[in-house]
Every structure is written in C-alpha cells, then in structure tokens.
Amino acid sequence: MYIAHTVDELRAALAGRSRPAFVPTMGNLHAGHLSLVRLARERADTCVTSIFVNRLQFLPHEDFDSYPRTWEADCEKLRAEGCDILFAPRETDLYPEPQVFKVQPDPQLADILEGEFRPGFFTGVCTVVMKLFSAVFATTGGGVAVFGKKDYQQLMVIQRMVQQFALPIEIVGAETARADGGLALSSRNGYLSEAQRQQATALSRELRQLAHATRTTATPLRELETQAMQALREQGWEPDYLTVRQRSNLLSPAADTQVRVNAPLVVLGAARLAGTRLIDNLEF
Image (cartoon, rainbow, N blue to C red; front, top):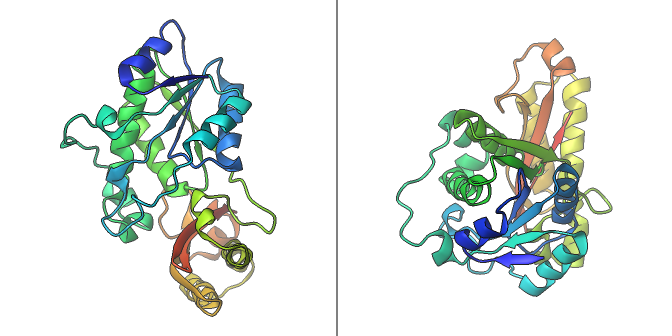
C-alpha cells in the first residue's frame, strides 16, 4: 500500500490509472469502514482510501481534538484489505491557506435534521469532499466514491452535490454495518463502556418500532415520533430527533394513509448516551 501525504504525491501515484474507487474516512477504522473498502475494490482496479479529520465539520464545542486517531492500526487494517493507495494529508497539505472558498449545500436539504443541530456541518463536509474528489479524480477521468448509509443525510447531500456540479463520479451507498444487537458501527462507539454499548442498542430498536408503527397504525406521525423520543429519554438518552421522512428529499411524508403504508420512507435518529452522540437510520 502506497501512502501519499500531498495532493501531488497522490496524483503521481494515480498516473496512468483510470476510474479508481475512493473511500473517504476520518480514520479510527472499524469493520464498517472496511466493508466500504471491500466494496470499492469490487468496483475498480485501484482502491484509494483517505484518512483526514476535517476541522471544518466540527462545531467549536465538539470533539475535534479528542476524536480518536489510530494511525498504525488503521494502516494495518487497510493493508490487510488490499487497499492500493492511502491518502493521509496533514491539515496544512489539504488547507495550505485558510479555506475561505466553501461549498454551500442546498439549505432545504442541509439545514434540517443534522444541519439543524450541527449548523454549518454540511458546508464543512461538502468543502472537504470536493477537495478530496479533486485530489483523487482530477487526473483520472472520474471514478467511484463509496459512502456508508449510516450517515444517510450526508450521503444524500453528497449525491446532490455531485449531480449539481456534473462531477464524473458514481456515488455508491453501502448498507450500514451493525454489531450484535443492532448497534450501528461508529468510531464514536469507542467512547462507550461495554455496558453503555449494550444500552446503545435501544436507538436502533426504537427506530424499528417507529417504522413498524408508521406502517401499521393510524396514530398521527408526530405523536409516534414524540413517543419514540420519550421512550429513549426514559432509558437515559438525550434525543435530538427521531423522525420519519421521505427517502427522496427527507421531508415529512404527507398525512395520507396510503403514503404511510406504501411510500419509500426512512426513519432517522440522533441522540446522546452518556455524552456520546450517536446517529442511525432505517429505510422501510
């Protein structure tokens, strides 16, 4: 596995290769990340993974400085999965000067849900992803980029960005990897004790129950969402949202019964357990 730290090193390593598959990460790799790498290897002859903790998507009170960084273990895992190129820029490599030009996503999509509770988050995400796409694909004629569905809204924002800018990149959404009990794999799970990890399965369980109730009862949707959030609070959580949305645009579905029974929907949740903020979702 070749490790590139600068954009020039990365582009030199990709010289003569066409349409690589790219997996952007912030490191602290777990089985979910590695499943994305395997999917990327199936999609192209060259697999590129990046590790970069992007300051632009963290709010001042969030965990940028304490975000887990496990460089040696990450490299070992990527080598074992057959990753061809690791792009690991330093902050001064990717942002050699203050990043005053930024990608502003559509507020109708980016200022709801995660964007409401983490204002500016998707601007930071889109800006770094655009820079990473430029570094990886500018000399290759495009390619494939793989993102996990656990970050459902992020995946949709990136898909829209690629479409709007007519980028020659195929965005592939990979299914969420889960531990026993249904807990979605996340780097932030490492903040939890073993007992808290068992308790954390409540998030996916409440999402499943909310999805089931949406399809099978006539109870108003807002009432079902309120009940789900209260159920989490009673188990020691601090929920930001548990909500049912249309898959196509993440807006609330119409009140029509047939829509609730037949429309492609997704239930999304974000909540803190013992100070650790976890997100999850379920298409149904």
